[in-house]
Length: 376
Image (cartoon, rainbow, N blue to C red; front, side, top):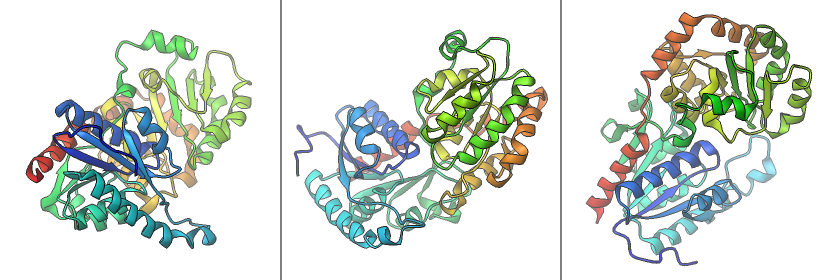
């Protein structure tokens, strides 16, 4: 195994997990907060080979080791035959990494690699902490929750899933650069090439299971343009060509289409209404932004956790929810209803802002360092 540390830090922390941006970016935010609070800390990431963390984490300036692990496939019997082998391989590799790195604390943020790493760390007596992003805990975290010392959560009522005495409500770490929206309106209008004076809808379609949303948007754009709305539309790569064809039918300066929006703070700055899936990280960003939102939960999300996330907001009059099977029939009118009702927009904005926990990364980092001090 390659050398993991060039010097002996005061504390050594392993952060495991990934698979999607919703796990990776919060994990990096925790690592950044750890370095801010304790500059001499040594940090090693453990991810899943072939997943995006193997690229994103080094780009953020951190070392990473990969486990040969993936989830069970819904429609892949042959692929699932290798699952037990992958689990055993990952447990063995996790043990070797832990023995070599000798962490004071192991942190699990969710994703394929989190389970094997935290399981082995807890078995070896390493102080461990997991972060549960969603309002409905996943199976892996429910199992790990019995073994770890701390469980950081973003929603109330999580004692349904975890021992109450281990729970700390910290919120979910978010991409700080995406939330820098103050004073950027003119730059954002220029960046997107949109005409001023029109309220703006931001649609975050994404690439994972958002075709239903993208199709509904395609059928709704003519109505929204007629109503006087600007549109910024993130489609994901698979739908980009179809969306570009739709966009070409409308006046320049009123609709912009992207497979991925790199200047998300500009998009958030202009948005009067955000239409999005209900992943935990996105929901946390929306709470901090305090902007009206229509949430369309991903129906294939494990344990339907996105619907649970959205319902948490809906029950506090902090967002509007449309189920995926309803999106074709309801999206156009729901967008028009919210965009044309200033009082409703204000209510949604005020209520969602009340749920914000903007210092989540630092709060989690403090808990990690408390565990590290106890273990050293």
